[in-house]
Image (cartoon, rainbow, N blue to C red):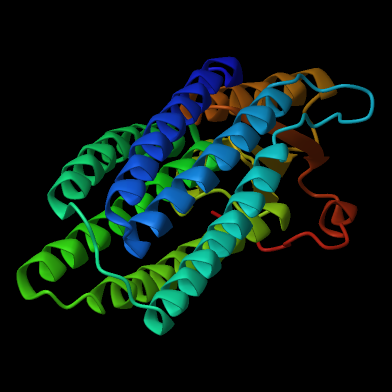
Length: 303
């Protein structure tokens, strides 16, 4: 699936945020619940995050150019960092509203209507969040996955708020409303920090998954039975794209043409086994000591 096709999921997130923000705002105005206010505030953040996700996905889909020869896919990490920050800001707003309600408690009105509206809005968020998370993981798009997790925190917020309102309705203890608001705020802060951490790892050029590394090593091991060796296997991931580089050592008697055709076979097999991967190989003579003098390259031969 190309980057361009992923933008439709960002539009879906934007539309969802508009609908759920409207519903939760109505629920808050009807009931006066600080929990529902926090829920509505988080949906506003969802809207801002979805707009950022759309912008970054459009930027990430741009092809490489003279100034960005490896493409623009890292733009997705900026989106998830901002989303993490917005989540934390929403949590702080929720906590402040809860503290204010502790100090100035108010009776809640028409809880049944508020519960129905909030439940319907959270159901919409749940369905869309699962779509975004599943698609984000499949396409290795941290932007979509972050947006999905953001919506999922909104679902948990709604569940906590609904639980609090049910308890308030049963027990009459209005103080439970801000207590649940604080609990939700803490949970949201943790989610925000996790998103920022994942983006940081992406900026630091983290390796591709261990499963994908194993696929590459198995392919190389197969070719090692044909008089060749390899070293300096390095990988990195940039949002949906993967990059692999490796030094291939062939017998000294091979011609450049024969060696080149051989390593092209290796590259094609890796590309056909792992989606959206760019493979760079470096051809070296097997018995030349200089082949093992590369600075910063792992010199351990894998057999």
